[in-house]
Length: 414
Image 1 (cartoon, rainbow, N blue to C red):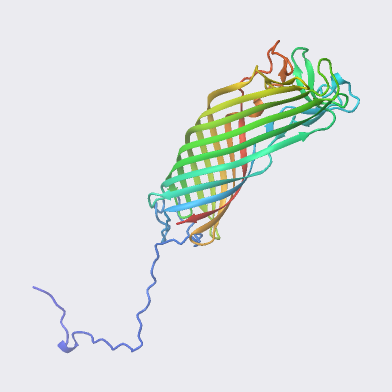
Image 2 (cartoon, rainbow, N blue to C red):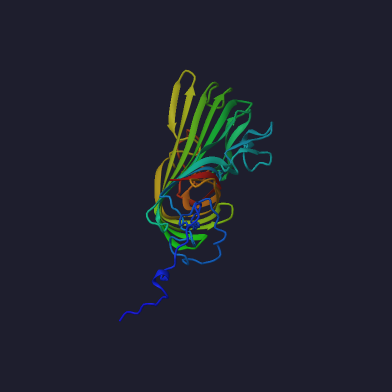
């Protein structure tokens, strides 16, 4: 049996529809958007839920629209760790005794170059980062390369009284090789110090935690680093008066050349935190640790050429600090770590472009520095034959290197 309601009359069993006005419009229904436009603010949602409270791809009632690719280009204004050189060029007051000229143990001696750090001024560089996603949860890959370009610290002097200070192991005392002296020698010296830094990352990004305004990513991958430093000293002198067996007009040119190269290869792990702020901005903090092997190579070279009027030229291996006792190529591999810390603020111009400003610091352990290659002990002066303690010598010594600075950039998403 089927039950149906009973009405008073079939004609009134159904309610008659009233005719609609001619200009009647349906009431509008607000559509809920599930796409996040990067320029919009998240302030209303930022404190509602903790990590993973919204799922990997949700933002409250809105879901963020993700671009699969982005390119981040940055101008770097960085400083590299100073090269701590020993005193390389000195001078003395006029009238100083010949045997005391330029010696570091004399009160009147002035250091013209060396004895302090050089090459730590701010310099330009660049960094380019390419990112692409592989899932709606924010997972993806990242390639990044940076370069802090080569910078040269130069010195040149041709004054009338110049010397290069050393420690004479034969006499066990401070000494100096004269470059110029008003009584019998005219000469000059030039020095150039170069350094540059490059690094490369290949990373896998894995989303660990997300909320309406915060996200935390795990970074795992490969890191490469390259640090090069060099020092070259060129010296030229002409005898204006005879000195013992050296006749007037004899010239002497010599150079010392030191080059240090570091190549790091290793694994890397890190974390990247992002916080969405007001006014379409974000705060980013990053910490990474690279660990692996640093391959260091030292190259030392030097040469002296004497030219005697009417007798031609003679060339000898070795200068003053680079002699046959330490000239050569040396290499060594050591375990090394490269931690990197950074912070960055971004602000969005439209849904495709962001501007960024940040600060980073890189610390590199067990690096070969060019200053550590220099031995100022000498047992003979060019072109004398090596004798005695056979100095200068070379020993591998490593040090910690630090680079840091500001970055200014733009991110383009597509």
